Image (cartoon, rainbow, N blue to C red):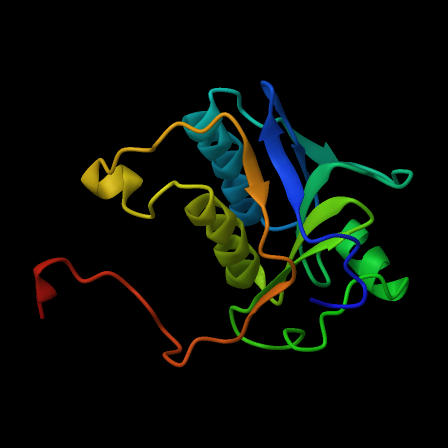
Amino acid sequence: MSAMAQSKTFCIAKDGKTAAIVVDEQDWKGVIRAANDLGDDVRKVCGTASEVKLLTSYLSPLTSNIIVGTIGNSRIIDKLIKQKKLDVSRVKGQWESFVIDIVDENLVVAGSDKRGTIYGIYEISQRIGVSPWYWWADVPVRHQDEVYWNAGRFVQPSPKVKYRGIFINDEW
């Protein structure tokens, strides 16, 4: 865990209350879409959706939120980097990579690029119990009353295969 991380766990949902998801309105549309998907995935797991808040201007310091954004496209992510609260040295400038960390009592997802941020958001969905195959294969979601991120700092480097995809029936 990074010296910058404040604690090892972050409460996503407990007692019917969920952490809000904060995303810069200037970030990629796909990132905003994935943030909304995460809010709904929290609902699938615990029964209450996480509200998605679009950052439209400077906000005072936030706490107890899930902050998602792309390096260079998110004012709040860029501010955390500038303040040296978020270390992105292992992902900045990389292909489809991301870091998830707990900073100032917020769970932060910072992607190196649009896809990196989106993969980081869906990493949280998967870890709280929503299968990537939920939509395609009707994989059921197990209900949980409490949901936490307890992985501390997590860095996903660039994939070994540059272009990934799903090939149904391996058609050529």
